[in-house]
Length: 98
Image (cartoon, rainbow, N blue to C red; front, side, top):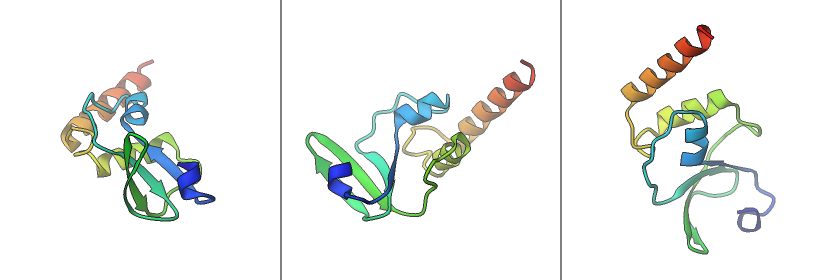
């Protein structure tokens, strides 16, 4: 991606990132979503497909940013806002009781 976008900034969002937050699913995605500062559209590099979105994003996204991003793209994660809210509530409850 660095070679394709050059000096442009970017951040990957992916099932792996969402699963690391404990909020993802096992859904298979046709393309990895990448927020970047250069271009929007779909591109295939090698045997992988990417969806590029030229939008504002933090240079060092926090876990909270990825949770908000997940809510904005719940259809890509194969889940619903209701399920995400339940998972967040469950996680918050478990953390508070630890």
